[in-house]
Length: 347
Image (cartoon, rainbow, N blue to C red; front, side, top):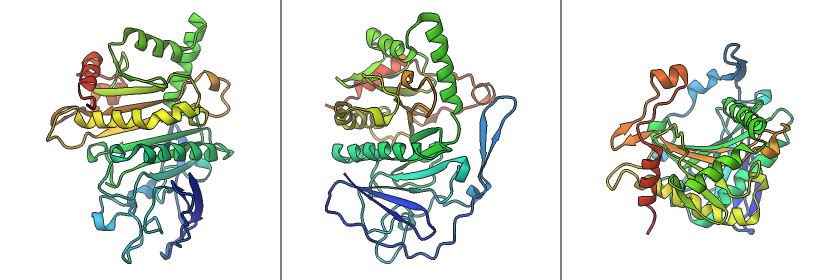
């Protein structure tokens, strides 16, 4: 992998990640951009104890542009985008409309490919491995920022999810706090340790592997399963078989196997609902241990992949119980979801 860092016209950082070592990245962003002005502010909810980012400047962000005006495509034929070069493998850059900025954190965009009409599932294993290297490198870089406590790499796919740019891409949020979901996991981790003397993540994975009914696929380095109490209609959790706190700690064997495993999961998601269906909308989210927490080594890196589509032509909406009280109601039994995801395995 070759890494080349540069700056856009308004001062934001952009990083190219290339498969070939001989690639030269010297294109300059010629756009007359004004310096970025953000209004991002993190406020704490006194009742729930969680944090909310207030970012009014995001009202003006790019919204469903036509393909020939996509800001994530390479700059070509006289049209200048967020990526100055005429082609790229993987690119990461600071978001022009960040939810978090300055002391409130940092938001980055990850472009998986220069092909506007592709998806992550279309990538080669070599290119998927490069994305993993980019996620890992960004986690390492952002961990060095003094105000960052947790790094979250994720992908939203599909208009149903709320995606406003069709180009295949993901995002990275560097939070100045431990997120509420992670805090709940850490609390459960503490409770389980106090009650049993064992690690909660290890016991969860061991249970799923032993019962096997909800396991979707397993290799020497990774295991993917539908969790016992899945919140979403089709939800898969992917764990390395050796517990590590974050992406930086994955060993070479796990990195080598990841592209094959992850691409297979994404391709199965696209086959869940049968031929003729539009691409399955999904969220893919890496859960990494917060920095500086004494329980870091007890936390388990894992990826959660889920869709809001519950059956052909129907979505799972977060209505009264889910949105009002955070109590999920799942219409698809986890065992049935796992069975369907095994049925659509690649031949």
